[in-house]
Length: 199
Image (tube, rainbow, N blue to C red; front, side):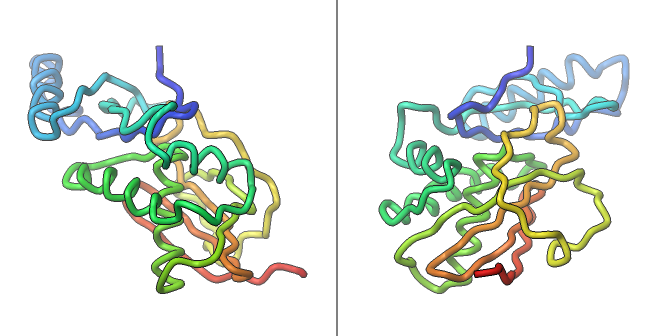
């Protein structure tokens, strides 16, 4: 049974032993999971993030509701409501995620949102008065369209299934003090462009 995101914030680390020696894969994979638990001092459970072709990985939950204030901030964010309090929480979430970035990571929608908002706040060079999610969608990570050429959207999609995350780029449109940005997040890679929206 695959875990689903819900209000949780989780991160997945790709199983680097997959594709190695078939005879020892099960024990190699289990040893890798135990090594991750020693390295990061958290528990990991197996997950598959590859629809069509397996991408074995290990999942750990960073936070769950009810929990830190940033879990609440994320919930409000995905409702598309302006957020003008606890803006520093985004950096806290991103820092929690970044500690895993020495490994090949894949993020769920909630984790990707933290990196997207952090990128926007860095672009604004300081904390704005408010931020608001205008749109969220996910694409196949190898899609040909450039981020800047995507059509504007007003829809906030649900989080993609965990099984699809290995091939997903998260795309956010975020308004910050009247300026709009489109941010693509694929793993730990973040791309940001300013966009124009009709008044």
